[in-house]
Amino acid sequence: MTEMSVCASPSAGIDALCRRLAEFLRRAGRPVAFMEVCGTHTVAIFRSGLRSQLPEGLRILSGPGCPVCVTDPSEIDMALSLAKRDCILLTYGDMLRVPGSSGSLLDLKGGGARVRTVTSALQSLEVARNNPTSEVVFLGVGFETTAPATAITLRQALRHGLANFSVLCLHKTVPPVMRALCSNPALKIDGFILPGNVTVITGLGDYAFLTDELHRAAAVAGFEPEEILASIVDLARQVAENDFRLSSWRLRDVPEGGNPTARRVLSEVFQPCDALWRGLGLIADSGCRMATPYERFDAAKKFGLDPPTAGPDNGCRCGEVLSGLKTPPECELYGTACTPVTPIGPCMVSGEGTCGAWYRYR
Ligand code: SF4
Image (cartoon, rainbow, N blue to C red; front, top):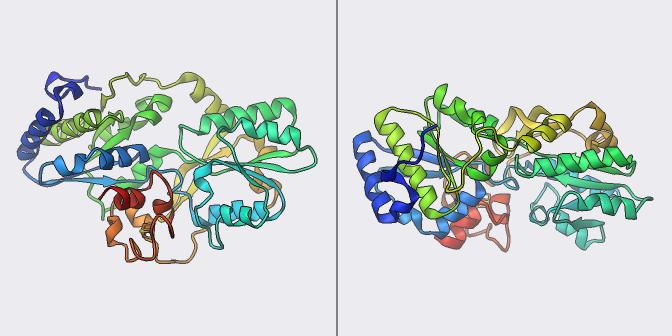
C-alpha cells in the first residue's frame, strides 16, 4: 500500500489536486474511467460539485455501492410475502419505498401489515421478546458495514433461544461484485475508488486482487471532497505510471487487517453464498447465508420462501446504471415516469441512489 504523498495529500486543496490530476491524465495519454462503489461517495461527489471541476478525459462512474439499489425485486417480493403472512417485519427505513413486483412494504404498511422500521438490528430482539405470540422477522440488508450488526443480533438470538425470531438475510459483499464488473468486456474501468467505511471492517487485503491480479488502479477514499479527489489523483497516477498499488486517502487510517471483532463475528455467523444483484444477475460468493448453528433463524427456510430469481423487465435501467453502462438520463423513464416522488427503481428511491443524486444535484 502506498502512503499519502505530499503532492496528492487531501490538504493540498482542491485547485492543486485538480492541477495534479490534469497532469497525470495528460501523461496517461488516453481517456480513463474510474468507478466509485459507495452510495455515500455517489452523493458526496454530486453534492460537492466535484464532477464539474474534473478535467476532460476523465469519467467517474457510479457503481453498485448503494445496498438498497442492488437488492433485486424478487428479494423485495420475499419481504412482501412475509409481511402478508402477518409476521412483524422489521426493516431499516430506506427499504420501505423500494418497489417489488407488486408494490412496496410501505404500501402494505398502509394497508395494515405489521411493517415497522428499526434503527438497529438489535432492536428487533426486543420486539421479538415483547411479542412472543408473533413471528418477528428482521430484513438484513447492506454490505460489510451493516452485516456485523445482523451477525451480532443472530448470536444474541441463539444465546437466548428466541424461537419467534428470524432474519431474511439479503446481505451482500463488495469484492465479488467488483471482480464481476472487471470481467465484463463491455465495461472499461481503469480504477476504483474504494469505500472507506467498508475497508475499515474488511481491511485492505480483500481488495488486493484489483491491483495485484487484475492490474486496475485502486484507492480508498474518505468522504470529504478533498479525500475523494486525492484518491482520484492517485488512481490517475497509477494508470499514468502503470504502477498499480492500493493506496488509502482517508485522513483517518484504515487498519490493514480491518476490524478483527467484526470479521470474527461475520465468519462465525455467515458463510459466502451466491447472491442475486439487481440488474447484474447471480454473482458467486457475493451473499451471506447463515452457518449451521444459525440456520434456524433463516426466514427464507423457516417460511419456505422461493429463492430470488430475476424478474421481467419493467423498463427500469438500474442494473445498467449500477454497472456504469448508462447514466440515469439515458433511462427513458428518468425524470418523466420516474422521479423521487414517483420512483420506479431503487436508484431513485434511495438517498444514496445514483438516479436520485442526478435528479437532486444536476
Ligand atoms: S431513472 Fe428510475 S427507472 Fe430509470 S434506472 Fe433510475 S430508478 Fe430505474
